[in-house]
Structure formats: C-alpha cells, structure tokens
Length: 345
Image 1 (spheres, helix red, strand yellow):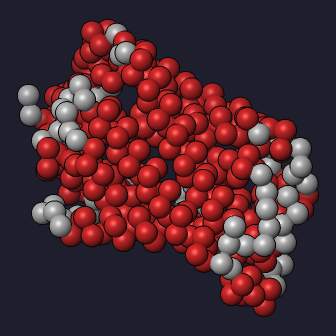
Image 2 (cartoon, one colour):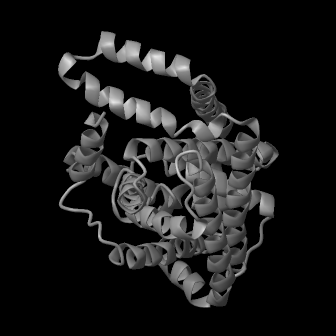
C-alpha cells in the first residue's frame, strides 16, 4: 500500500491549491457561469482529445517495436486503462498498471515497458516546457492579479524544469546509444554498491529496463517520437480551445498552449487523485491574468477538468473490466511482480 503520509501530503497540497484558486470567488456568479455555458462544445472537444489518446497509443506502439510489434488498436485500450489508474489512484499509479496489463496481454516485461513509459513522460515534459518557452512573451501579461502565478517566477521554473527534463533525456539517449557501456555501468554499480542479497534482482530489472530504451538508438525514431508528442499536446490544446467556446471569453490559441503547459507541469506535484487543485489553481490564475473574470475562469477550468477526467476514466474502466487482470488490494502486488520478473535470468 502506498504510504499514507504520501497520500495525505497530496491531499494537503490539493486543498491549499484550491483555497488559493477560489479565494474571493462569488459562488452566485460561478453558478451563473456554469448554467449559461454552451455544453455542446464539449462534444468536439472530447472527440479531438480521443484522437490525441489514439496518437499516444500509436507513440507507445512505435516505441515498443524493438521489443514487440503490437498494433495501435491493441495499445489503445491499455493506454486508457493507464489514464483511468492515474485519475483515480495517487502517484500516477496508472503507469504501473498499464505496464502490468501489457505484460499480462502481450508478455512484454514490466521493467522494459516502464522504460518506454518514463521516456514518454520525459518527452511530454520537454514539449510542455517548449509550450511555455514559445509563449514567454505572454508571461509579461501576468500581474499580481494572477494570484498563484503572480508570486511565481515562471521563467525560472521553466529554465529549471528544462534542465531537469533535457538532462534526463540526454542520459536515456546516451544509455540507448551505448548499450554495452550502459550494461557495464549497471553491472559495476550493482556489484560494488548494492548488498549481495538484492544484486541479481536489481541487475535483472535494470538490464531489462535498458532494453526498453532501444527506440532511442535511431535519430529518426527520436525525431518521430518528438513530433508525435508535439501533435499529441496540440490536440489536447485544441480541446481547451473547443471548451473555451462554451464560455463568454476568448484568448488566443497560444495563450491556451501556455495554460496547457503550465497546468500539466504543476500536475507533476503530489496531489489528491485526479490532480484536484494542482490543475485548477494555475488554470484559473492564468486566465485571470488575461482579464477573464474569476467566476468565468473557475467555471471554465472546472468544466475543462471534468471533460478531461470523466470520458477517459469511463472508457478506461470499461476496458479494464473486460480484461482478466485485477488491481488487487494494493500496488505492492504489482511491484512484487516486477521484482519477481527481475529475478528471472
């Protein structure tokens, strides 16, 4: 079971973010904004979002080709199951769940598929930061009225985040390009730094993890993964744009790219399940910086959050109930499977 203190820290962060986002909100104006919204715009927004989910499934299929060629139509349900897990469990537990489902269905080792998942997240982070950097000029419009964002130097955060994500990407690229050197480093580290009783398990897991990086050995493959990631996040921004038309305000597509980048970067913080607060606070604050009334900004962000959460979660639950693997009583069951897998020579 995930440690309780991790869960409660996430809940505390969510509560603080919500309190900051909603302070001064007039509930009557907020409910009026929700009642007046034209929810028909959610239909194209949800449709374009699922095109992006299909693109994610294609990207994962592409990255797994060196391990096993699996059709995108097979990957799509597994990706939605992962989204469902991320949305209802803390600590992005859906990533481990989809790796376990992939092993159960296709026999791909958990450690290898987790490597591709981590690489996905690194590319996602790089593109999110690119969205922020492309719109650095827009950040000049942020004022003290932006609340949470007004007291935060987004430029410094973006620069620091870029260093972290690009540094991680460089490490993975080098590990993929020089597999023999990476294997020797793994063996040296295991033999010299770890207790004897865990060496073989860690060695097995680490070596299988390295096999999951094979898609990064070709510059053409790296470029393809990056371009696909950009398309994925542009499609998600398109959902922001469609949902915006349900409310009486308008900002540029570039402003929504900036919002998408910032809110998704802040959802990497610990939070309650479903990214409560960590998604909403920066979204409301950013729209406020563009002059959108707080009640309208809060209504839009709430509806957008729900439109991002409910459809993919329901689809994930549907596909999850159609397959034999069950989550069990705790995440430790799956972690134990990964450890057992690593012990197999």
